[in-house]
Image (cartoon, rainbow, N blue to C red; front, top):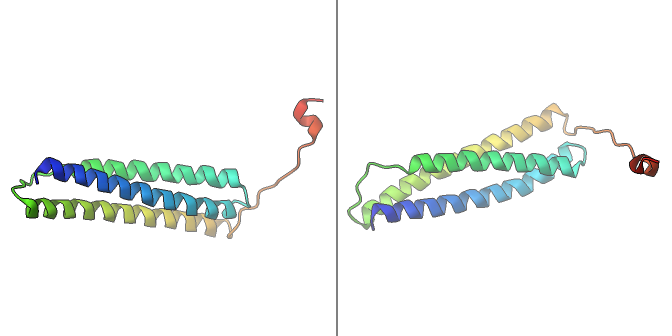
Amino acid sequence: MGIVTVYVLYLVISVVLTIVTATVLTRSGKTFLTRVFGGDEALGQALSRLFAVGFYLLNFGFIILAMRSSATVHGTRQAMDLLSVKLGEALLIIGALHLLNVLVLARISRRSGGLIRTEWRPVSRGSISGR
């Protein structure tokens, strides 16, 4: 198993782990943020997507930067050693970013007293059509 194979495996596994983690965070975060922002689903979903974009950018940036290695691979054992180190680094970053997201969400909730009250007023039909 050569270094190119290790790089390909590292990229595929890291990208899949990042996508799965971001998907779970987006779903759970949307529900939490909707609750925090007084039931405003659109705002909860928008903020959840923003968190996910930041999560993707930071993870993929790290994955690409950490891909480089000066190690030489002469056999399967060395390839697996290198792959395990690289995947371990990626998982630590994914975990750290997940923890950071949770801390930010907890801080938002704490600052808002658990619920940000948004004022909602129905719009009359005449004001929409301009009548």
